[in-house]
Image (tube, rainbow, N blue to C red; front, side, top):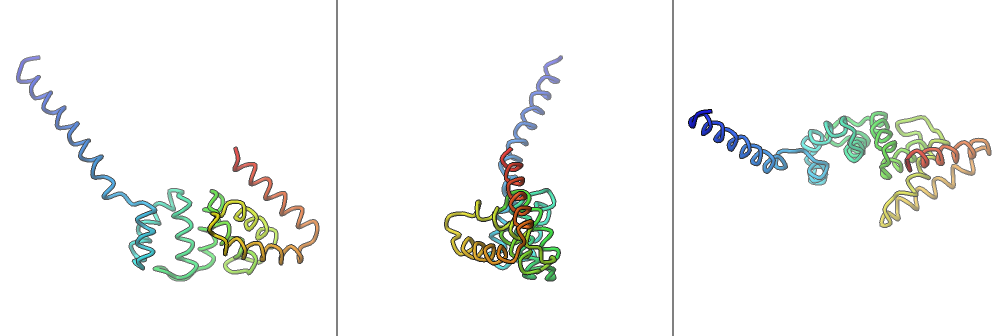
Amino acid sequence: MNRTTALWAGLLGFVAVAGLIVALAISPLFSHTVEKGAVAYADGDFPRAIAIFRPLAEDGDPAAQFYLGEMYRFGRGVKKDEARAALWYKKAANKGSPEAQYALGMMYATGIGVSVDFVESYRWLSLANFRLSPWETERRERSVRTRDTILRAMSQDDVERAKSLVIAWDRKWQK
């Protein structure tokens, strides 16, 4: 290799490495994260929040899926659609989001967006109770009260089936 070719090869290598470093340094400024979506949501900038959450949710992010469920449930930035909210909550709940498990359990208890199903309500509320943050006492207390109420309305077979669903989900989750 002659000297000019070696010089150009070295220069191109340097430019490539420098470009990669710059791209890595500025990519967080342009990437959409759940945190940025949560800030937009809290600020009431629902179009921006939807633009951030939707691709993340479609890629399987449970926090983004939960937020989309919230947005559809309450009609924030989208047309209110409780059935679609339940679908997003269920995706997030299946991935372990305690907030989505709670929301889905309450929806099954009340028939909002889904048919009333006490077995499913018991399952999701029980799982949420295990996973909700310690400071979420209001949600935990409400879910316990709801679960106790539906428990009295359930047959013994339904109670056993609901408990087995909780155990099965928990075992799967622990793997």
